[in-house]
Image (cartoon, rainbow, N blue to C red; front, side):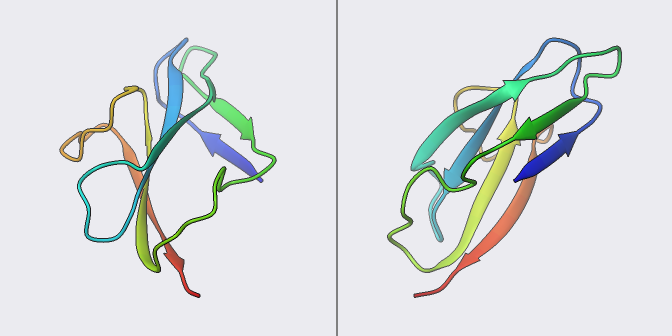
Length: 86
């Protein structure tokens, strides 16, 4: 899977937080890469988007962030939802 990010600031480490449904705590946080260039772009190639097997069905929150610790109130992050069904 390839992910393109722009406007994150130069030389930032990007993390991806996996938050299960109805939770405010990340189950897992992974480092996915570093930004480059003047505008802080990154092209991230991930062998597996999910680095673990999700154990809960529902809408997971996937938050790309430059902070290593997950913060649900961080407005500078990019958040996606991924539905997991069993």
